[in-house]
Length: 209
Image (cartoon, rainbow, N blue to C red; front, side, top):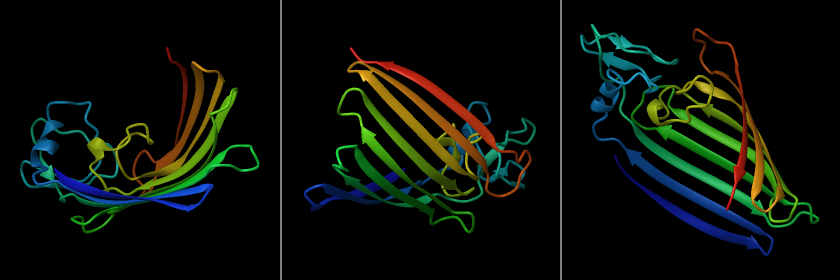
């Protein structure tokens, strides 16, 4: 993979900051990456693949190889154009630091189902004790937008063709302890079987020393 990224930090006012980024990530030879799944059942593949006999196996959900007719390569290439924008406000009546983020990716080498995006809002008051933060993000990742084996595995059943909301709460009662709660409610974008929403709740306690 050959890629690059450009980043621009702006300060529109004394209390706001704006971060803009753009990049491109081109995968020169993804065939061997598809073949990795033939010997490793922990690899998430939901992009369409070409089998050893030339048949195209449609993605959209997690697919597993048949030892008699294994994966040969992905049906499309991956040249991912990426852009993001994040706006932060340092203070809001002393209650916290609100932030908004917008992120988009488009696979230039796919003919269809090639776009993903996320946008969200958050409020952060972790600098003071007791500290807390709230955040919610809407995520939409079409089937061929990104390489499914590298996408966020806790989104739905894993892989691509997923959309839904991720909400998170953090609470820090003392300096060295943080409690975190994260909820995922995710469904397939394009109807596949199974097509029921996945509700995944994560609870973490972190200790710093």
